[in-house]
Image (cartoon, rainbow, N blue to C red; front, side):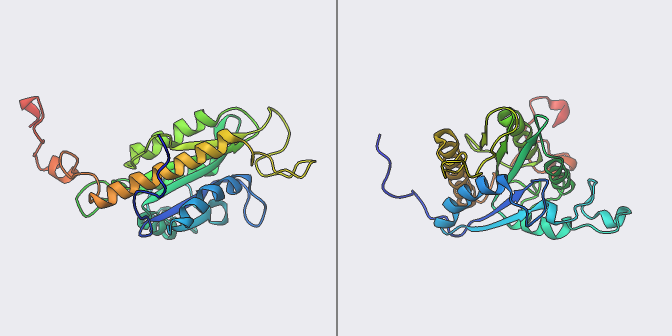
Length: 245
């Protein structure tokens, strides 16, 4: 089957937020950001309004409340970041691998996303319904799929919709060595010519866009059988057990 000559839809009314969970604050170079820029460029070329945030440039207080200054923290930049999360149709988390796991910064971001997961949207569903999520991973050790598994599980559990192949990443040889985007001795950049990484990043990006388009055009996930207030009011949506209706 041949590739269509043009995308099947327009995407210029979509917003995408890329949150880079490197442990390095700006302006230090970030290998994770370098890979995220591949996905960002594809989206930007389609007119998507793309925002890139480096989480370590912010002070995200630990905790699972919307504003941790109300719970003892001296400062918390999460409320401002959440406004960008709330406006985005697409959320992509980027993380390096450390000891086979996502970064502590990535876990912090997920914890703070959890803080708002009980909020409701205009349809009475949880706040992240109708939004799509993906993950990009970089490192010098095994663990891309393991890290992606945990991050994507967390996103869908909070209410995000995850499309097919919603993860991609790059790892070099095991042990110390060049990271994604590092200049090699022959002038090439590590990972830039890795077909597996470039293909999967491209597939992930377009699948995020396609699913975000479908959800936006459909008005989100249908609001039947998933409204917390309706459940609390005793409307149990045709539960097969009469005792729970």
